[in-house]
Image (cartoon, rainbow, N blue to C red):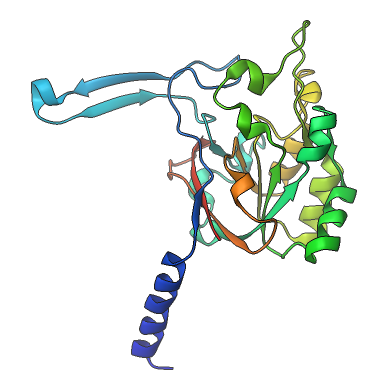
Length: 249
C-alpha cells in the first residue's frame, strides 16, 4: 500500500473515531477534593490576572497522587518505571469494565476476586490481552465529598471496596494486563489500607504496570468494546501525576 493510501486510511480512521461517543473518565480537581489525609491539600495562586496583567496564569501546588491520577511502578517500587518511561503506546488500550456495583451495595468492603473476572468472561469472552481493566463499584457517585469517599467508621477505619491480589495476579499473568483503574482512592480495600497495608497495589506496580485511581463515569461505558485513552504529563523521574482519561465507545 502506498504512503498516500496509508495516510488517507489513517485520516478515515480519525473521522470514524470522531463519530463515536467520547466519555470523560476524569474528575476535575481543586482544593478540598478527597485525598489521603497524610498528604497536603492543593494550593492554587493566581500569579497574573486579566485585571492587572491582561492574561491569567496560576501556580498549582499539588502532590502527584491528586484527583484522578496515574501511579507508575516507581510510586511503590524503588527501581520501578517512572512516568517518563511509560510509552505512549501504553496509553491507548482495549477497555474492559468489571461491574460489581451490586455486590458493593450489599458490602462496602467487597474485594474483587478471580470469580468476578470469570463471570465477566462468561458474558463477554476473555479479557483482551494488553487491556486496561477498570473496576466499577459505584464509588464515583460519592465524589467530591471526602467523608463519603473515605467512608470512615467511628474508630477511623475506611470502608470502601478494592482489588484482591489474586485478581490482579490473574489479570497480569493470564491476561497480559497493561494497566488497571478504579473509582476508589486506593487499589486495596479500605480496611486493608487503614492498617497501612497495600498488597494489591504493591503487586500490580511490581509487575511494571501503571494504574489510574479515582476514575469517573464508568457507568456510561459498556463492559466490553470501548477504547481507553489514558494520558498524563511526562515529568522526569515522576512518581505520579493528575491524569486525563477518557473512553471512546
